[in-house]
Every structure is written in C-alpha cells, then in structure tokens.
Image 1 (cartoon, rainbow, N blue to C red):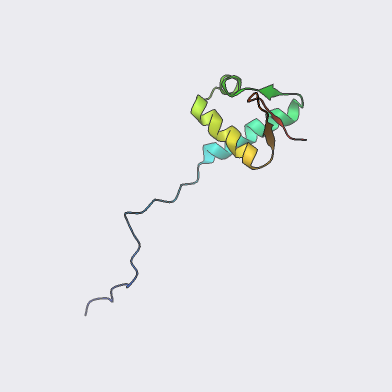
Image 2: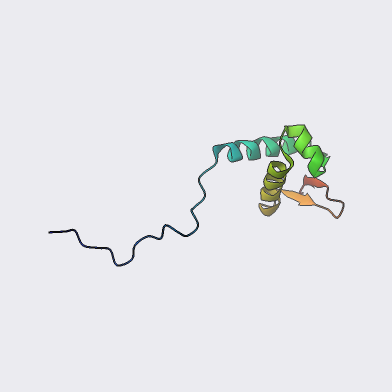
Amino acid sequence: MAPPVDANPVSTTGPRPKRFDASLSADLARIRSEYIEMPGLVLTLPQAARLWGLGTQRAAELLSALLNAGFLACDNRSVYRRRR
C-alpha cells in the first residue's frame, strides 16, 4: 500500500528561506565594536567599505542592518555615526 499523499505539499517554486550567514554576524560584531571603541567615528559608505576591507554593497548591507537595529544613525550627508 502506498503512503498517503500530503494534501498541502511544500512549494518548491516559492522563495527560499535565507540561510544563516555566520560571516554576517562576525562583520556586524566587528563594526559594532569599532563604533564602540571610537565614540566619535563618523563614516560615509565608501569610507566604511575601505576601512573594513569590504565591497560597497556588503558595507551598505551591514550599515543598513545596524541602522534598522537602532545602533547607527545616518544624517542627510550620508554619514554614519553611532546613535546616542
């Protein structure tokens, strides 16, 4: 006898869940610690990418995550600083 067929099969055509990115966590921790160690640190996106040896897109992703978490603030000059 065949096993029963699930009436609600999992879609294989929909978006896939994001995998945990260990390097993302490590990079976020490194950037947080830099801002904590240097309270007056203010960086533009290109400066941040150079300082941490990252591509511009990766730096933007990390800075955006820290903005969304409320750790950083970005002013109208696109300068990233630690939120007080």
